[in-house]
Length: 290
Image 1 (spheres, rainbow, N blue to C red):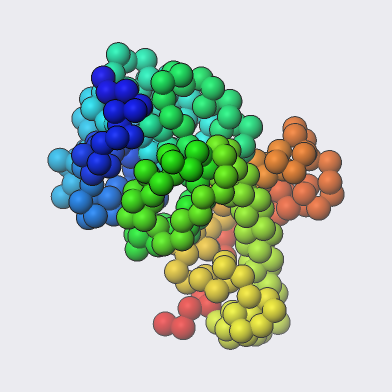
Image 2: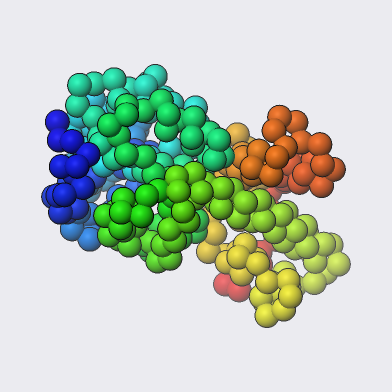
């Protein structure tokens, strides 16, 4: 098994890149890597046959996946799934051969990231690289990455991020990327609730919702969520276990940990934000212009 030094001295396109968690974000990220000429392979709990046209780029099982890759990009949902990937379910790091570089792109709190990083073998390089942009930007290869890690490690891995993203920021040491991401998502959650409530109020008052979005986009009410409402595939969702609104709620709890509210939040605004996300109903209306 190659050492960390061996890998860092090897051209990155000679490395085998594995993407774990090939869902709405991970699978288009894998496709962008393949399109850019990287030697990539994906893994998901779904069978390879679900990935029509890309079956040859999907590992048959977790052992086959983990034992053949040099660099692991983890895009699973949360801490529990990351622990499962590493040791409990897929057990990537219980084999004799395992990846020597791990990029955690799941959204976790900085504390969760650090706890997980400490469980990995000491000869593994770990960076955090959460991303932002929703599936539409993963498909277009225009994600935003916030990367925490040593500068030389970031520079070595930069071509990977450039293949999948448009804005790549080295945020500082490991865990700094997670801190920035969850704080960013705290703001995103606030704007999601606000935009959905405003569109509901517009409908109640007989206002054209598409016009409302257009006015907001050109005014002080501009937000990423409102500006891209029709391009965001989850913009009309209600809160349901496992969907993107629920993931956003999870991200808010990670942000609250970063803000210093561990356990049950005490601030009334934060309590109201979590309640608003958990009580979000399906969107009613058609703001699109089609």
